Length: 560
RNA sequence: UGGGGCGUAGCCAAGUUGGCAAGGCACGGGACUUUGGAUCCCGCCACCGCAGGUUCGAAUCCUGCCGCCCCAGCCA
Image 1 (cartoon, chains in turn yellow, green):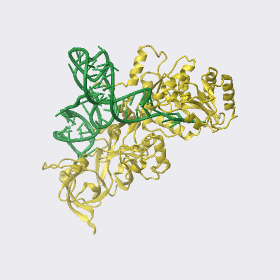
Image 2 (cartoon, helix red, strand yellow):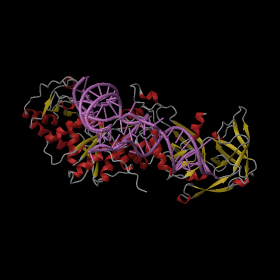
Image 3 (cartoon, protein in one colour):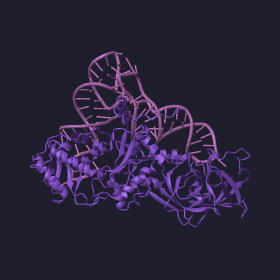
Image 4 (tube, rainbow, N blue to C red):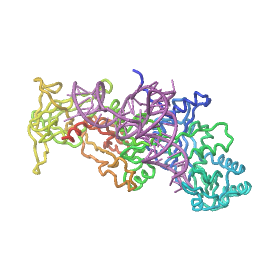
């Protein structure tokens, strides 16, 4: 009965070792530092769970920091969505909410310090010239003609940059490191650029803005971050991260550790692609339930618990990886299975008339909301009457072998109700089956047939006169290929045209009529559904399919 | 090509004083079942990227090779 032990990841191992060496007397401090220029997605959720999870487990803290050093791309809308998403995932940054922008003054002072130490200079070259003199992967760069300005001149120029004396893009402040370094990041990286752009936080107090490399590590240091956890692509930046820290006289220094970002099959995770889908209307917005955004997953009906569990299951390592979407789906099913009430909802109704059940009579059936543990969620009443709806695909005139549902002459159990036999199918002029005439076995309302005959299966149904009409939105994977971003072509060419199917004529049992926005159900034999918080109004019920149930019949049928 | 990383079953991922390969997902089979759901069993014969070497013994140490990812934004 012991807890299944989660293998600790390499980051926790590093922390354990450092702790054992007495390195962090003041505890562990991590941070989640999104740039507010887009919505968070499940890849961010991995990082959030990692950072906040470590803080929680080590009795430390995790900061939420907006990495807002670029005024041209950032927006208040994103800040709010980020905060909402992190909170919704179940994490709390307490009083530790920060903005890199709040450190601009401090950063500026430190920049002057580097200039005085001869470790930074103002470069008058254009962006093109800087690019052209950076060298290549195999050839060293060439020094800027302005590289050897005196600290005094640099200081004067830098102050005038700040004062707004120079036009946008005319000058930059560069770190003076090594134009021949094999690590391109060390070839005199730009620290500041001039940009007359209103910043969402600092307004127009600044016309110079620090670059990521100069701002990030220093922000970490200011906040007392012990472990600055980021994704693999920043690995080559670590020497620069450390170099900047080395220039300052700091009492303690953060350590940057990189891990592999999350990729998921049948979706895209890059901000660029995500915003393109939203912008072009391929989806209904950042919270479209087909998107891997936190907002989309939330709207779809995923629970924070499921996402956190998913983050645990996928682990944390340094190898590039693409996780199978199935794992995410399995994880939500596991979560929902034990906490969501069952109900019946006929998606594509087929009319059934029970010929030996009197017209006008109603029989009430009591059924558990959670059959696996009835006391847990109580019971509800289900009306039974002469005319019912059953699922269209639960009837087949010519049943293939192993088909356990209804067909002429065959019997099936109505879930919680009696066993019925199909006597004949009524067709329209076009030959389409529009109604089934059936007979019920009155002895089977609350038990197996007296004669001991076996009934192969139970199907869901609703009483036509009592049913509640609902709209169902059946979501499927957004793309038809496992890796739509690969290949260099237009990823949108792989969009799944059937990623959303709306069923406007579904019929649910009466109990579902009491659903409140945000409620979840398992519609038996079909899947888990979420009453859409926005679209359930004016008495209209709209359910999003969170995830279908595992469908083993589909597999059998597919095999023939 | 220079630099930085990574390579353990279809997909994730443990394994670190060298002792002779966890777990999850997927997949296959069975039991049970008034959800073809859930649950429970069983299976999934892993040459640990490849080739050498050290050693009584290596996924773990050494050498060489191969493959994949990241870096040449005044983005983060």
